Image (cartoon, rainbow, N blue to C red; front, side, top):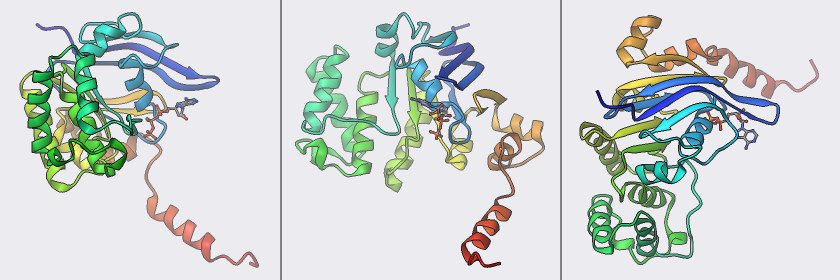
Length: 262
Ligand code: ATP
């Protein structure tokens, strides 16, 4: 059997006195699209930042593509792609310059970078912007560029944080299709999102994190079975502090119409 693409044991991380991760265990096999969901502040980005070697000062063990992100950051970075929710890009570069820079950092020949990026940008309808400055791109175009940069070195493990934000319908469909095809070729995708219907359809397995702890993990069918609830939204609400949204909305409206004299 091949070794796990991602392995995490007893992962704990605090920011000052705030405990963000309280001991997470998770194993992701190669070729899996692993969903990672939870409420705002649950600890998703913290987990990803540890796994990609951007965050230190954590307890527990982590392995990505067989390497330790604490001590083997270069090995990890060679094998991963990352599409963050908010990225700082080099705004003064053109799209072509930026992609050449990223590809060269991965030791790729320029001809390989150009071939691969031409194909990806063409599919994403961004080829016409090759000589545009990054600062001139729309939000969705920046997201497409991030995808291209994350894929150019054909990473073993792809970390996606709200990857469809700002994408138009065609690009969204393409990315979802690509995620499935990459997994079929043995690539692993770690997919963080609040868009639960997409998570339900795209992910092979789903892990639910709440206040820094893993509270459920399995296929969607297994989670439905375990919880006796037919939607991921309902399952998440039952495991976290969700639910009662109608009441909450009514209370807000009541407060808004309260003139303070009663
Ligand atoms: P979201 O869905 O809103 O992106 P998340 O699940 O990604 O949330 P994290 O960003 O991992 O959550 O945050 C987990 C906890 O750690 C939160 O309570 C957050 O306030 C805290 N936290 C995250 N980054 C920092 C930081 N740099 N300094 C202090 N606290 C932080």
